Length: 396
Image 1: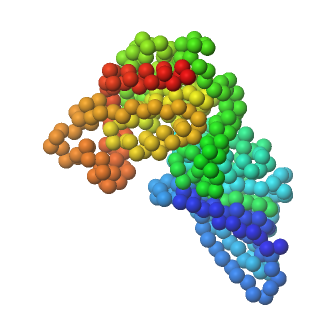
Image 2: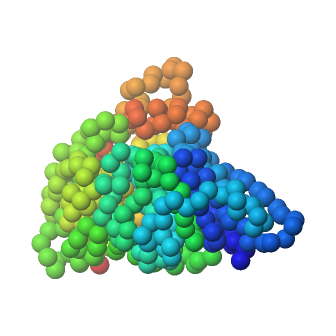
């Protein structure tokens, strides 16, 4: 039987789904596809793929192992294929998904948008009966997200760089190389599905997370049915620091909120339980907002947007929050609330008010100006309106 090869690639990731006689040689990072024809004429081909969902990012992809796929449609070519010397107990009939935990996987946002969300979207068709083969294993990554991985597969993750696998040839009847990723950040937008279905997939993913971490709250109740609404203000010590966070907390308490100021612990289980206990989550763009995944549905996310970050704030958190069935509010910082005005004088070489010019100089320059070196001192009178809107939403 001829192998079936489907190219499922898009702008974010290269993905191939292959059914046939598949042999994965760890030492050479090569996937061999057995031929299915006895014809004297044959077509051989070889191509490469990096199984990480950020293929336009040269820095990230430079950290990813290049896999080679080799195929010949002539049965006689089987002699050039390596022999199977290790068949996993479940691999005779179980498919495998190959992906990398290199790239930016140490960053929580990228762990989800580049790996875990695409992995969920790619693997859900198998109902946990699938093996995960990982290249470029990031230290501690698998254990950090083990509770999520266990919800996606009933088998232990196979580390392809480990000695016991590196020198082996693993055999499978079906393999997906790479992960099917959304065109958008931190969400799922399968082009063949409707927008409404995108949201359903995302809320199914957040339900899976609540199950994985045994989170108690599935949705927010109307204010008045239980105590004061609880608000989490996410703190950050460096870069996009909220200078007057204590004044913000005091104002929110005066409006009727129970307020907690907290820095994320970095332990997913601890952070998940913490975030799930709140009705409102406030944070500066990129300051732990990835944890909105653990909010109950109908909770409110308030994103404080530093100067110059309007576009990435929308793509990274506004659109994803709405697809997770969260209610989204934002507060755009004026220049007089940003530390940029004191960091750069008017005659400085860097014109920080010209976001277009800064962006054209590349992401590293953009990051150094707007992300790494901008702190915020919020106008309390103006921000009060946002908090009142949150109270209004919680009462309906």
